[in-house]
Amino acid sequence: MNPIREAELIETRRHFFGRSATGIGAAALGSLLNPDLFGATANDPTAANEMQALPGLPHFAPKAKRVIYLFMSGAPSQIDMWDYKPKMRDWFDKDLPDSVRNGQRITTMTSGQARFPIAPSMFKFHRHGEHGAWVSELLPHTASVVDNLAVIKTVNTEAINHDPAITYIQTGSQLPGRPSTGAWLSYGLGSMNQNLPAFVVLHSTVNGGFGGQALYARLWGTGFLSTRHQGVSLRSTGDPVLYLSNPDGMTPQMRRRMLDELAKLNRERYGEVGDPEIQSRIAQYEMAYRMQTSVPELTDISLESNHTLEMYGEDVKKPGTFAANCLLARRLAERGVRFTQVFIRQWDQHGNLPNDIRRQCGIIDQPCAALINDLKQRGMLDDTLVVWGGEFGRTIYCQGGLTMTNYGRDHHPRCYTKWMAGGGIKPGIVYGETDDFSYNVQENPVHIHDLNATILHCLGINHERLTFRHQGRDFRLTDVHGHVVKEILA
Image (cartoon, rainbow, N blue to C red; front, side, top):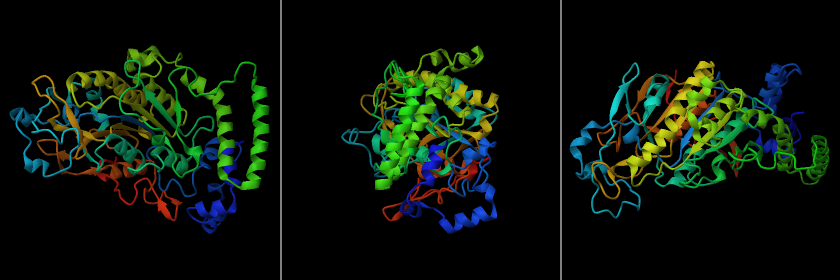
């Protein structure tokens, strides 16, 4: 039984015609010309899984089958990690020139400052890899895999505060209510494993807690898409998914009978009101039933080799840590999960940045490198796209008191660094250039819509054609913008 496919087949005519991207004529013609596109044999599980994709998707041969997105919530400082600016040493405590800022908007947290003193990074940078990419001493492990990365130094966004900025890069809009990237991929490409969700979210602890800016469920939500495409958030303690385990006294047979009876009631209700969300609910109940077996196996790392565990670092055995979540992301990728989002917070370093960024980099550096090496060793990096970065960057000027050993930085949306690796991405390159102050883009800007368009391209999707009609217009992840960054494609 495939409940997602079943739900698609029994939607009402009104919803079918309203939501069809190509129309019934094109679908019928396609099925006549090439029936294999619309059917699957019982002995071909791959074909059965692909039936969950929208007709016509992927639009072209994909390089990547899946995505692991390592999201640094709170905005890591590109100046202290990736964007080396040696000339700034001579600018210590001098004011940021008006010609550089050029009247650009700043946040209320520093707009009241009497001056904007330059705070050069106190961290050393060294060249790494075949092409000599500059990487901070904060990231020795990541520096060792830089030949696998495309480092993009010119990502930019209009959003200047955390919540709208994270909402923007995750959904294509600063306003809540749009589908997240993972939801779009679930909707367009479907799942490769019917026992696990297409979209999984992992939240990483820092010093035993989360802290930092709040992350709302809309960041992995579906907006106006069916709720069956929503990201499933795995918990780090207790049951990975709430209410997944049977309560005391309930056997698997009893749970099966309960779900069967509940499905009958839901189908009766569906017959009365025709709401497709009822079918989504049935599909979600069935997915939860199958996850009772698949999730415990997924989260059991006891069979991982000592070499693998050592590669990720000592935190890997602590559930919920970034290291544990990076290993779990690889295991999810192995099992066909389409999109895995790994969040880690506490990058919002307005003060005491040197100490805080040392801690954060100490948490993420080794697991990031381990994930790249682990995927590569297993032959999975070629078709797994890994993305790293936050919602915006940090300013070259100091927020608060400035000394030679301590400073803070405010939000900076004009330019910041992200990296990509794996499926479809050219390895070992640095793309784009910023000015001497890491304040403005000088060469090859990459807007976050361009970034999302490129992610979709690697998965075989034309970002202009993956749309959903809602309230009289066609919506897409990149809104009405976005260009694929062809220069970073393999």
